[in-house]
Image 1 (cartoon, rainbow, N blue to C red):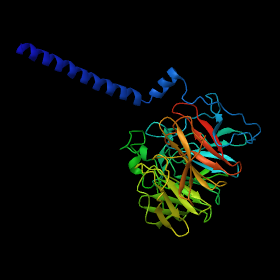
Image 2 (image 1 turned 30 degrees about the horizontal axis):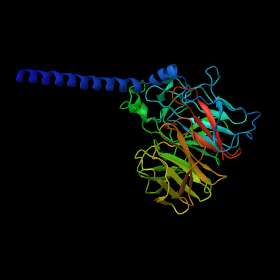
Image 3 (image 1 turned 120 degrees about the horizontal axis):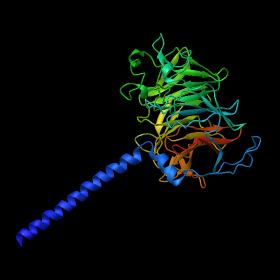
Image 4 (image 1 turned 180 degrees about the horizontal axis):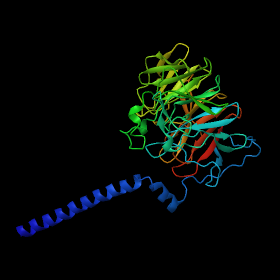
Length: 397
């Protein structure tokens, strides 16, 4: 009887142990499969597109029929288009109000993506343009000043993450880019530039002339806002950048950056907008997932965290955000479980409000490609689920 019990115990224990091992193996395999970069393609092949929203027809640049208070898709790329590219989650954006065009620059890099082209979306023609072809990795080099350059004429920046480090400067009619190709360095990913990385002596701030469509290497003090953010102060006409070790002002290509504040946000994956009604910078989002609003009062150079007693959106990072000049509020798209919601922040009241009917049909993930078009009074947003065609959306408020 005792032998039988012992035998049953060991048989039962063996079965349970084997089941546990199989479950662990199954869990590991499931994780490996679902995190593989081809998994979204497999899901798309089996279930179809995540985003099944139809494109809303716009005729002759007339947006008057666009519904108010909900997101409307106005364009989606097709593989047959002259300009066709995957949205870069790690890229950034700006908006040129003089020519009515959204501007994208930035790459996912990670040793695989080498897209260093500048793309524009024309709001008049609803058409994408590439201002120059992306440079082949074979053209990447270090110039005589120790600066990484790309292209046939060594006149383009390398592909890089830009996040919130790309800003439109209306006074100079240029883009200011203050990031660097961190994820091309040998310690991150082995690439064909690994052997020349050690010869880099400076990662400069780049400026892009929107009249001539040419890049210039700024000569002044450089500063990187890689994984951090910048915004444009429309009252004092200056670009301001936010890092954990302080707040910095862009002077010009000759003078570079100057520190104007010691306190910064101790997080990365942040985003910032300038509230022109209250003359403050508003920052939200970050890797610490704190769901706090931070503000920097431009005139008095005071940095503080808002108490925000009432309702708050879910904590998130790399949040697409703009300041809507007409309603005088910051607008952010913040992920929930299966969809994203649109939230409005009123600085004067220190109050968040979720926009009823402003749901996005899927989670938007890391995204710095949302801008405000003041001429049309529209928020313009570039978004698409992974491995699906890049789409342009608008929100009228």
